[in-house]
Length: 239
Ligand code: SF4
Image (spheres, rainbow, N blue to C red):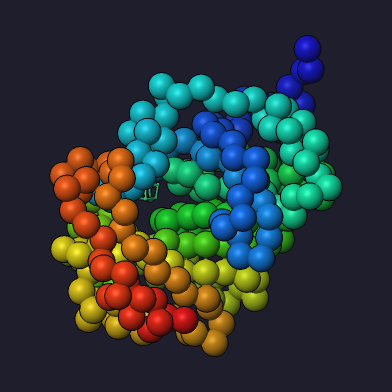
């Protein structure tokens, strides 16, 4: 049986982010790249429209996939995968994230991080250590407290969100700010205000339409996304 690998001052398996899911191939999560996705358990938001709520609400009830098993499965796909996306949940909550990415980088993997931007200090460390090749940050609403907290399902440190936006905007690495929009949470004015928060010459923007399938707040399963016509008009505003 392979022994957990010591890494720096911590045993790698012992301090790793809890990997609760592994998707071997995705064509859509990293624009232009075929990637695998690791899903890390735990999140500090409770977005009512979240589709990954088992990862958010009860990650301890899900099996943790050993990191060495992940490395073996990635190695077997090295010839056709272009990178690894680390998603969640919220990966930056895990103290072992930099070490895990360092290990993946040592094997030659390009790394995309999905984050909600609440831990700018972690993002700064990862960017400073050149550990990231692409970042997608969910910016859930214009940075107005009541709007943002409705979308995130609880208290939000807006200064931290702004700091993460600024870090990524200045980073020089490919990045995307994205927002899931839902009738009842977002108006056209919100989308206009959201777009104005970014430097579009530096940052890619994208919108996702709310999908009422297995939502964290079950009341949202009775809601609908925007009609295709309205969503297409909103999407054209950020294109
Ligand atoms: S959608 Fe919200 S609650 Fe779900 S993983 Fe992302 S930040 Fe966490």
